[in-house]
Structure formats: C-alpha cells, structure tokens
Amino acid sequence: MNILELLYDHYKDTCEKLEKQIHQRNKNFAFSFLITCVLLLFAINPAEYRDLMFEYIRTEFSIDLSSQFFVIQTLLWAVLLYETMRYSQVFANIERTYDYINALENKISNLSSQQFDRESGHYSSHFSLPLRYANYVYKFIFPAFSLMVALLKIISEFVIINNGLFLTIDSILCLAYILLVVFHIIFAVKTN
Image (cartoon, rainbow, N blue to C red; front, side, top):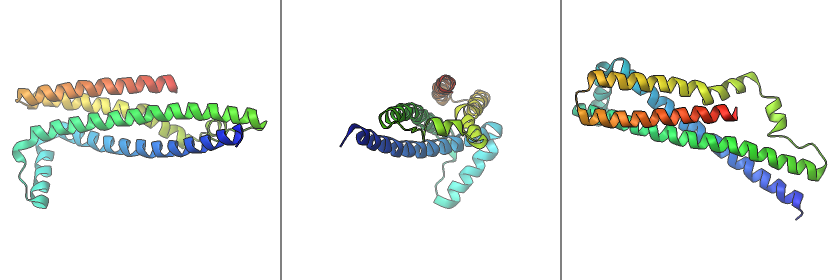
C-alpha cells in the first residue's frame, strides 16, 4: 500500500467519524433545546406548567411528585449543563475534524497532482444559505437564546424559591452553564 492509498483510507475513516460526530451533535442539540424550552416554560409560568407536569406524571405513572418540584428543577439544570457540555465538546471536535480533513485533502491533492477537496474547499465554497443559517444557529443563535432563558429562569427562581439549598445549587449550575455557553460562543467566533 502506498502513501496515497494510506492517506485516502485514513481520509475515508475520518469522514465516517465526522458523520457520527455530526449525528451526536444533533442529538445533544435537540435534547439541550428541549430542556431549555422546559426551563423557559417554568420561568414564564412555573405554577401552571408545574401542575400540568405533575398531573401528567400522576396519571401516566401513578406517582405523586408534587412535593419534589425543587428537586426536578435542579435536575433539569444539571441535565442541561451536562447536555450542553457534551454538545460543546462534540461541536469543537467537529470544527477540529474539518480542519484536519482540509489538511488531509491538501496532502492527497499534492501526492496525486489532482484537486481533491470534496469536504473542505469545494464544500465550504458551495455552502448554501440554509446550511449557513443552520451553522449560525448552532454557533450563535441557540447559545444566545439559551443564555437569555437561563438568566430569565434563575431570576424567576430568586423571586419564587424560598428554599436556600436548592436556590444555591441552581445558581451554581446556572453560573457554570453561563460560563460554558460564553466559552462556546468565544470558540465559535474564533472558528467562524
């Protein structure tokens, strides 16, 4: 096997891994978006949505969690932080993988004396408007929206919650979440 064949095989493997990373990013994004929306509902009208949620759980699962609202809110914060952390990690890996694919394509082009830029040069030069929009949603719009929701939610908790322990835990999780999203946006700006 010559170096060109070896590089091309490695290139194919890297592209397959990239597809898996994109799939994982999309799953993390969807789950983060869902939790962000639930937190938004609890920030807007906590009593009504809390009652709806507890009624659903009571009828579907015959479990009464009505006294556990603070615990559920804290779990939502923790899950949101975790899923957003995973989303940001996969997002950063995808950006690095595209840079690596670009380097592989350049090496393959040089060795083969043929233009080889399926994923990097050609793809990025033909980045359609919907793809550009989706890219901005992943990098900027959703993070900005989620920051606003997090701030709105934690402010509403300071107004409503009279349990110091859960308010402290939620505040720490919210602060960690805000820092994570700000770092995500900074990374996205650098790689844009």
